[in-house]
Each structure stands twice: as C-alpha cells, then as structure tokens.
Image 1 (cartoon, rainbow, N blue to C red):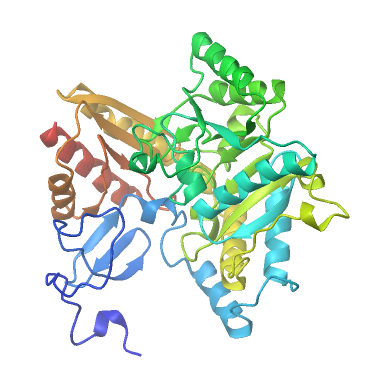
Image 2: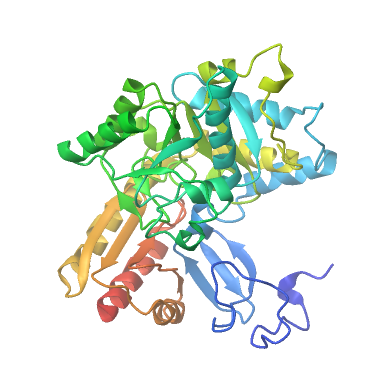
Length: 428
C-alpha cells in the first residue's frame, strides 16, 4: 500500500459537493474545507501540501506522549501480529488483565474493578448505569437521576448529554429528548455549598449519584476550580449517601499536573471514568472503574443483578497494548515533571495577554493554558490565523486554549504561546 504522503493523487479537500464524510460539530454547508493530515510526529502534524503545524491541543487532549512514540507503536505492532481482537464475552486476554491490574494499582482507595469500553461518552454511560442499578440491586426504586454541575460536559451519547450543562452546553436543543437531571453550581462559596446541600436533601429519594469533572470542566469552557471545591462535593455526597462519579476523561494522565486530578483534593470517588490519553492518543479505549463496595452490589446469585453492558470491541487487545505501553512511559519518563514545566511556561508566556483590552481572563492549571475573551470572537477567522501562523489551535466559545503533548519541545511550546498571544491580542 502506498503511504499517504506518497500518493500521486492527493485528496481534493476543496470540492465539497461529493463529500461523503459528515464532520464533527460542523455546519457542513458553511464550513471551510478541512486540512488533509498525512503524517504526525512528536508535536507536529504534516499536511498534504507539505506544511507542518505545531499541535497545541494534542488531538483533543489524547497524545500526551506526542505522536508516534516508538514504545507505543512497537507494542501495538507486536500485539497486531499475535491477536488484534477477540470478543470479551466469555474470553479474556493478557493485555486487558494487565491493564486492569495496573490501573487499580495507580488509582486511589479501593477503585479495583475496571470495565472497559471504547469511548469516553460510553464510559460515562456505564458509570450512570452502575449508579442507577446499584440502587435497584439493593431493592430501592425511584433513584434514576444524577446531580451534575453547570458548566459541565460529559459526552455526546444520551445519558452523558443529559448530565451536560442544560443551558450553555452544546446539547441544550435536545432537552426534551433527554433524561431530566438535577443541576447545581459548583460549591465555590459557602452559600453555593448550602445550595448544593439543599438540592441533595430536596431530591434525596430520586438521586442515584453525583457526577463531576475534577478541577477542570473541559469542553464546557476550561472552567477551573480549586481542590477544596472537589473535596466539598465529596463531603456532601458522603453525607447524603450518594456515590460520587469522577469524570477524568480529560483530566486523567497528567493533564492537571498530577496523574489524576482527584489526587490534588485527596478525593477517592466511587466510580471513575478514563479515556482520551489512556492509550497515549493511538487507539480508542475507555474505562469505568468502580470501588469494591460498588462492585459488591452486583456480586449476586441473581442473574438480574449483573451489569448488562458489553461493547463489541470491549477491551480490544490492540488498545489495551497501547494503554499498557503508555503506562510504561509514565513509569520511566518524567511526564509529571514535564507537565509542571509546561505549566510554568504557560503562566509566564500568557501573562502579557491578561492586560489586553477585551480579555476577560487568563488561567493555567497543570499543562492547560486558557485565554478567555470578554465576548466570543470570530472563531473561523481565529482558526485560519492560527493555521497561517503554523500552529494547530482550535478555539471554541469564548476561549483559546493550549493542551499540548507533555513531551513538547521548549521551542515548539514557545511558538504556540507566541501564536496565542499574537492572535488573541489582535482578536480582542
């Protein structure tokens, strides 16, 4: 097969009339033609016309080790030669067994039971099903709702959408179609803590769980909160006897400066969701991890107490091999040190934008840097300016953000920061 970079007839990305692809989050009628990527390496994307772009968002926060890390690539190639896939119903395999044990060892407390899926949204769906079913398994009916937080985002599937911000989120038009959940503000103040406590009391007979994105609400606008807020949420969840679901799909694997965001608050959730960086940005895989106490509610002589979920590609061996290789890299290479260095560079480098007219906020946590505008800019124009500047940055809403690979070189990071400062200042 001829490599993409050597094709004699590259894909024509300008003729949209025969476009068979329906693209994500895109109004197809008016969207600019997408760029054709033909290769990736480190923190760079090579385009079909020969240009290189420095990737500032690590392919939606997945490629924490950069693209094409040889250790992950070799592990996947080795697994491909032996067993690319086998069904997980009634069978098991070493990559999944090893990965589950390693995740359980890394996570705090008794998060010991790993259910593999193939996307972050589905990992959240499984967490919600676990929460609802554990009450049914106890013989308690009516607990079918979750308490979620405004500004949050948990995915694009039905249950996950229902837990996203109902007013500001991208799924608000589906409100009549979705299950009805209970929403509160994050308890940033004593008054908001009291409001959350009151909501938990008011809905105590219908709530199955509380769900939160620890420290950063990612796709909701990169909204950050201190560890004390997360600790308050855990405290109130425990007070009212509700399982706490931590959605670490974005925050897991070093993005906030610790391996998992929950660590910074000393919080151990009852259920934790992982995806995105789990395989180092190579293959689709997600995990929903439950404590032994949660798992025990499904351990029964009654077949109806089993968790009835099972994706076709659950625990795909190739993806598990990639995830194991990614965990190897966290063990032998200084990813958290690198995340800290990126954070310091973002803090210093983005600081000058703070004083520009039209800028509402500049904030940094771990390897996440955000510039927020007072009002949403022309996003299409911003994206084109970034491409012209030689970087791949995808602003959304009223923010421009950077979440680069933890392995990004100092030079590439400096280029990204300079581009954000230049483009944001001009747009503001």
